[in-house]
Image (cartoon, rainbow, N blue to C red; front, side):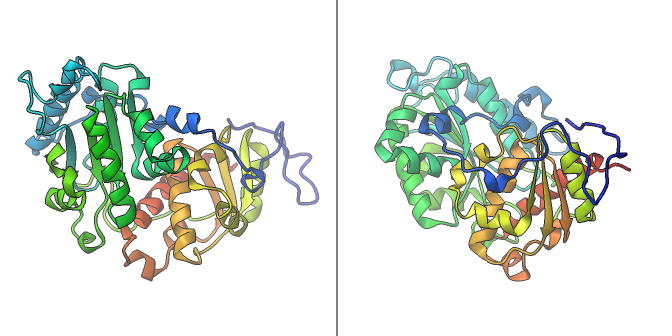
Length: 367
């Protein structure tokens, strides 16, 4: 919430002060109990209200309407399913499925066709209480395993009816094997699966990820997934988005002091702080923050730092927290080598999301 304050007291270069003044993300060192990591495995706030009937299929792309129909039936079929009960054989139709048949669905489509919208809609439509279904990104799932341990994660999620994994990352073979092993154990306990995925480095120029590659990479788990192709144009953009021009340090600081719940940090210091906070805590790092204000934004120095920034950008975007910044535009954060390398899609996503949040932050600056 933005507080409108008089600037009559704005002297000696100091901006007007909101009720509590800006906080500093660099001063926060959140400790997140494992129970919270599990409880927060729900669609992020941006997808709280999405449903199948709020998805607008492109009339020229029949696969989009078909996806809604198939996923709606998939969700309805989970109503009588229990992880350890007799109903767990019902998945895609009214006919009982063979135990070796697909127990999951993989949404195969290009950027911007609404895969996350459909995945979140599936979660909302599944007739089970929230405690019996989970939704998270691949990174959040690996963080959960790191916090709980493999066996405890199996026990925790094994009673669920549905696990949705957004942005299944296939660029880290070790994590891919870890999660594949986890999902195999969950399937044995009757958990239904749904996933979208990122591209492999060798497929980066194609704009979509072929289901055959996904199924091959998850090795023995492939038999448990039914590929569901979703065609269509990217309704967002291709390539680098045009980032809004950054503001001055003074404008950013003034807005931070005038906005209740805002944080204010210098960008290099924040990058150093992120190295000391586990990525599983980046969501908690932003608890109660209404806007992130950053000064001296510049190119990210190395790949490890860049990947941490990607995670923070995802958490800010999920929580719809605007980002106001001075320095270089967000489309200049990553070097050409990074944008042409194996994590290219992640960096494009971070640029896109930070750009959207920068546009959201423009009203914080007094005109």
